Length: 412
Image 1 (cartoon, rainbow, N blue to C red):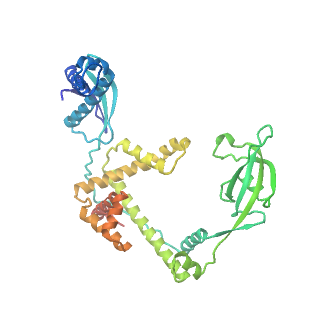
Image 2: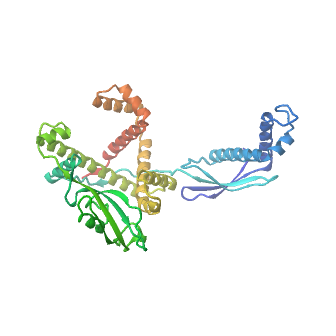
Image 3: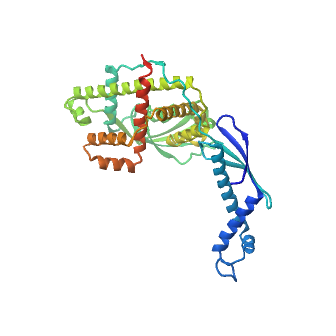
């Protein structure tokens, strides 16, 4: 394509290219677009496809113009990519488009490119493996969590206490003393679901009773406009339920996981905790090693990739709109570290031919199928349908990369 390309910015990973399409090329594109329209449109007094091109161009001027712009920008983009040999990191953007009748088409193309990563040094580093020891208290705490999950809630007629589950209706009075329509709330007292003044009032009631009094909102209340305000609150206690934990015995162990005894359950919990601690220690070693490699081999990372990762976490955590700006600022260093980590792994995998092969993936699927007692073909189809084969490929590649790195670096 006959176009003029003028680089305006080439620092970092951002490229700003000024593109100019000569008037001759623009006219050729206009003629082609007009002929395409003429071959398909119907105009009164003419057979299909027989309307004069000049009439078609006049009648469908705006549509033809839009088609010309889109086609020329796409062709120009492909030409820029071919000439400059860019490896694009994100969707390019067009700015400052100028397209006047009888004039050349010009625009600025903003492109973010992938970083060129050399990783001159990937060995000779020393990292420390720290594994947290699992003790009896850790095991008891985990077992208590299992008990909590299997607790039963029994209605009581007593005044509620911390830990009880209650249902209340609550309304607040405005400055004129009029109460708003009360709303029903389920609460577990002592869990921070209600402000202290409200909880104190609830715990003075028995089911069926109503009370009202002024309550001061705390200074650290999430809604800044309500901090430190005092409002008259009316509370009606509907019911109270008290939690009963199952006895910690062999029967509980059998119910919790088909264990023969409480000792067997405790042993299984300890094993799980120790395996988790070991995985955490391994992850710590890997992250230390990647951090040292990143420090020894500095490179830029695409901002669009960081933003994309942050957006994913915003959606996953359902961050409220008002909190998103703060979340983005606080999470950005974590996202940058993750992008840098992924780029290092990809670079090592590519350079050392460590990427997972189809055979590797088939073997891993067979392992999964064996553990499930299922047919490997059915498991493969299920994973493929769920879009999880890519996960398996990445996991195997990471394992190969870290095995390669561990052989060349010291772990104390």
